[in-house]
Length: 130
Image (cartoon, rainbow, N blue to C red; front, side):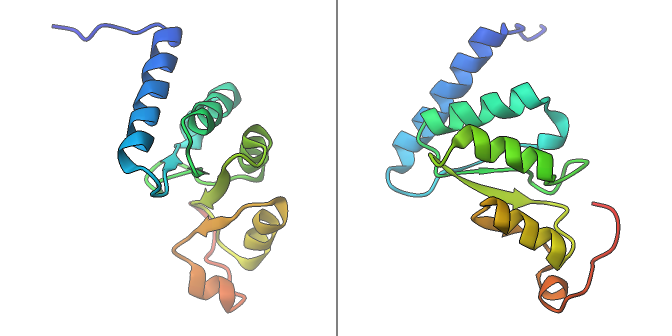
């Protein structure tokens, strides 16, 4: 049997309900909601941020590291503008060098997710790619 296809409105409601339930279950512990921004439109990214903030998320994060791309300056700006200080932003995936790390921090990102921390601190680049 095929799964029922949900309308965008219903999907939005289910997502918001699930995020609120998770926040209620964890209480004062930190809730970090991770998006795969590489698969979302700007409208979907903004909606994901909005639903996360409304549910009481502490952080929104750009990527798990398993998608086809990570943090971009454009995505992080959109996320920062959308959460408007009501949640923190973590830029993750694709942070390859100190220049990129500094740009994200200067934009207002509170955490970076990278597997290149030693190279970044040493002033080296991890190279191209994601």
